[in-house]
Amino acid sequence: MSLLHRLYATRWQRIEKMTTNTHTPPGSILRWLGVIALPTVLTLAFLWAGGWLTPHRLTQASMLDALRKGSGMQSGFRRNHAKGICVAGWFEGNGNISSLSTATVLKKERIPVIGRFALAGGLPYQADAPGKVRSMALRLSPSDGQEWRMGINDIPVFPVGTPQEFHDLQLASRPDPATGKPDPTRMQAFRTSHPWLQPAMAQIGQRPVSSGFADDTYHSLDSFLLVAEDGTKTAIRWAMVPVQPAMPDAGHTNDHDYLFQQVIKDIHTHPLQWRLMVTLAGKDDAIDNPSKEWSQDDRQIDAGTLTLTGIGSEENGPCTGITFDPLVLPKGVMPSGDPILQARSAAYMRSFYLRSGEGPTTPAISPEMTALPATAKDKRS
Amino acid sequence: MRNIEAFPLSSRILHWGMAVMILAMLFIGVFIASTVGSGYHRLVALHRSLGIAILVLAVLRLGNRLRTPSPPLPADLPPVMKVGAHASHILLYTLMIVLPLVGWGMLSAGGYPIPIWGQSVLLPPILPHNPMLWAWLRSLHTVLAFLLFGLVLAHIAAALFHGLIRRDGVLRSML
Ligand code: HEM
Ligand code: HEM
Ligand code: HEM
Image: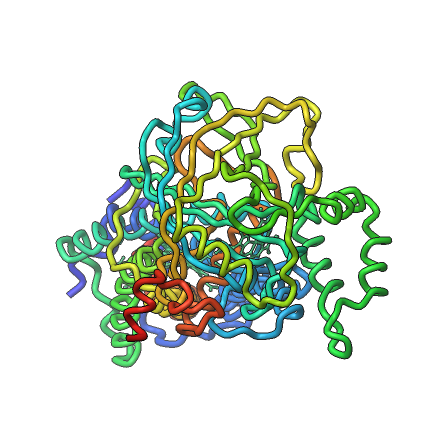
């Protein structure tokens, strides 16, 4: 028994002796208040921590609600980038940035990759169209388990810089039930109340559009920090730049799935490759705001090559049962202070949880569409 | 009957240390599940590490509890209360062990890497990668955590009832 406790014991025992035989001592109201005070305080604090007392707090639920306003409930599908296709291949680092980051994925080694091409937006059966935002998602899995996951888009900058702006933009751009198109007055109101986002929106509107997934460039948009052996941090963004020459869009507006059909055909004929181009932040670049463009003079380093050789439907493909959470990072890469990254990590987990519980889906791009021509013929005969 | 008056020091240290950790985990848990704010990533990382620490400590504590004597409840305590006290303690131990296992298991089933203590240790998966199982365990994690919180509240109210109303030495036995 501790000294402290022995001191206590003598004092308390005396009190106890006076009261032990009174089974229910006349508990004053004050004592009963003492009993319920701590549980009450804890309950209130718990309710506050869980956001129940602050209905305007931005939560996973309110982010997904805002996305659902645009697309309706699409049971079992990703809450954003819902129409997609699984791909597989490998990544081979070249060691060029090993002095800036200890990440094993960047070493000279071949690492298996699972990925996904998708169209932005929550509609799983939307028609392909040239102007729609395309995405590439990747999971690089080195043998030491230090995974790197990323979800990257073919726009030069992100339209917003904070989770609140993302939320408000979803609400502003949701389709009007009468026309099926965003309400122009609501969009205009968002633009006027967010003048600082004008440059980003203009850049996105004026971007060159390539012919398909294969010749597209995908950008991290968010910034990250590389961590070197000695702890030095370097702020970066990166892009996957196609090795295949970029062709201008040929405009197949009537074909519902032409982008996906094309990339299936491409990968069936030959592997597709991208260079991982890492951009080091210059001194005037905004690290924590993905809606701000970086200087054209920044140093760029080719850090390795992505090769995709396999493609398959989401229905039975390996990209469905995971989420490409951008904060699943290897040792040697860290999140920057960019607030969008935090919101993404939280929202992707919630989306992954909800859709997984809702069960399997019938995606627009079916296993029949992604089968090799030979096997498709086998099936028919 | 009253061979000892209080819990041994080891039990008291474990009890109070873990009380702070578990309450912190419950608050961090509901907070991370309802925020998209700047602390999210760091708090989830803390939640994983602290949760695994609780799992380890709970197993040690169970061993300690079974090996060391603990003070009996007052002889004059009504039988319902005795049963309630014992049942709630067993349930508290169960949840202190099962809840972190569900947390670990759900991330395994979800195909997530599970780093703890920064990036230094990667926990191996304890369940096969299965998205349905991930969703189911993620729900179970919430249900069990809320059950634990309710139980902790009742436990605290009971402890204060002993200390302030009955004044029967039970609260003191843990101080
Ligand atoms: C606060 C801002 C954002 C929110 C709330 C958000 C939300 C989401 C959600 C809920 C998903 C579905 C995840 C899943 O079920 O697995 C998703 C997918 C995706 N997001 Fe975001 N997103 C945001 C910003 C961004 C940014 C900045 C980028 C690009 C750099 C991006 C790229 C992607 C990609 C590529 C996917 C598809 C991943 C896949 O194919 O599985 N998102 N997003
Ligand atoms: C005594 C241990 C633990 C307690 C008391 C606890 C408590 C909680 C609570 C209250 C929530 C919020 C549930 C909700 O509102 O839906 C939560 C969520 C979560 N817990 Fe735990 N947990 C424990 C251990 C663990 C462990 C060991 C892990 C992983 C290794 C873990 C991973 C998670 C994750 C990933 C979430 C979801 C976060 C999100 O939704 O963004 N927990 N936990
Ligand atoms: C998360 C919070 C808590 C947990 C999980 C917890 C758990 C437990 C457990 C399992 C026991 C059984 C004895 C053992 O094996 O250690 C116990 C005993 C006890 N706890 Fe707690 N406790 C918590 C918080 C508190 C608080 C805040 C108080 C005081 C207000 C308290 C007062 C007591 C007392 C007086 C006992 C002794 C009961 C007896 O003599 O059988 N506990 N606690």
